[in-house]
Each structure stands twice: as C-alpha cells, then as structure tokens.
Amino acid sequence: MEYGLVFPMHGSSWLGAVLFLGVQLRALWPAAAMEVHTSKEVNAVNGTNLRLKCTFSSSSPISQHLSVTWNFQPEDLSSPELVLYYLQEPYNLPAGRFKERVTWDGNIERNDVSIMIWNLQPTDNGTFTCQVKNPPDADGVIGEVRLRVVQKVHFSEIHFLAVAIGSACVLMIIVVTVVIICRHHRKKAQEKRIEVTGTELKEKERLKTREQKEDSPLED
Image 1 (cartoon, rainbow, N blue to C red):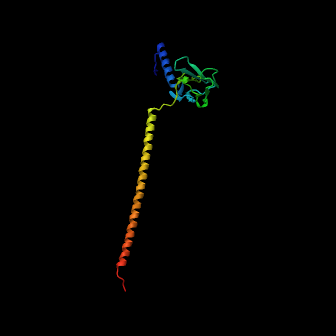
Image 2 (cartoon, rainbow, N blue to C red):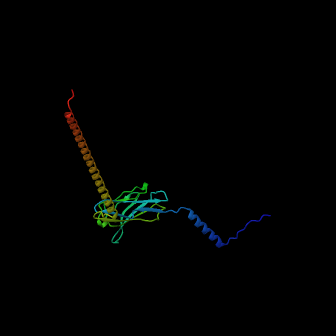
Image 3 (cartoon, helix red, strand yellow):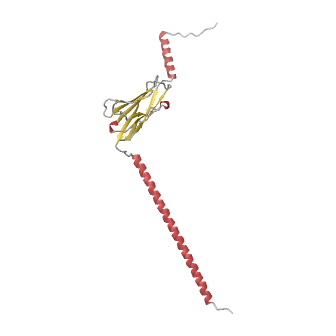
C-alpha cells in the first residue's frame, strides 16, 4: 500500500506562497528603467558655443514615441524654462532666452540626445535637465548638468602645477644645452692648444737637428 504526502494549505498560507512567488519572479525579471548620463558641472567662457552632452540607455528598443525634454533652472531659482523638446524631430522655442540659440545636436540611433547652445551669456548660469522617455521605459533618473559662464578661464591648481613643471623642464633643457655647448667649446680649445704645442715641439726639434748638423765637422 502506497502513502502520498499531503501538505495542508490554509487560505493565508496560499496567499503567502503567491506573494513570495511574485517577489521571486519580479527579482528575476529585468526591470524596465531609463538611465540618463550627463556631466555634473561644465564651465564655459562668455560668448562661446557649448555642446551639452546627454546620453541614455534603455532596456527597451527605441520606439517612435521616444521623447526628450531639456529644461533650464536659472540660478535665481525662478520658474524653470523649456529649452528644447524632441518627439520624432526637434521643436525649437518660439520665444524665451534660448530662442534661436539652441539647436539639436543628438543622434537617437546612438543614444545621444545632446544639444548645442550658441553665444553663451551670463544669464545662462543655472542647471539644465535632460529627461528621456522611451515607452514603456518612462521612469528613471533625470540627467542634470550645472553650467557656469565665466568671463575668462580661471586656472586651477593643476594648471599652475602643469605650468610650473613645464617651465622647470624648459629651464633644465636650456641649462643642459648650455653646459654641452660650453664643454664642446672647451674641448675644441684644448685640442687646438695641444695641436699648437705639438707644432711648436716639432719646429724646435727641427731647429735643434739643423743646428747639430751645422756644428758637426765636415768629413772628407
């Protein structure tokens, strides 16, 4: 006679098992998420042009409903402003501080949604946000980049250190070159003195030999 194993299951036990199974399946199933990547902070000189880079990665294939929204939050914490909107094609602003100064510079096929800002102005100081939605990937971290527009480039400590090291290297090269030249001239002068001394010795030897011949008696 065979006996089977029987596990008593109550209503609450069934509910707990279903919830546990759901949690396990959700952990194994890849979560749909949008990741956006930007520079944290960018410095640029007043009057120049700047490319604000923004890239994304999505767990879903790129769809025709992919949208990109660039916003700007001024430093004075006034109302945010729309900079550029993309949905199958970029839409430029009809008005605002960025009118005719912002253009699309991205490539959706390469997951690039960057923009170009022309003729930077001090009023452009603030935080730019880059939001990408690729249904069903609609939620995710919004990329942020803080822009500082300066009148001229300020050298950091690293720049000063690089300049100092470069100057030291140049000075060392000059010193080594001068030493080599001086040694070369000194060697040439020493060789010339040796040559003159050798010539004088030969001349004295020749005169001495001549005098000896003159002083010797004539042989028959």
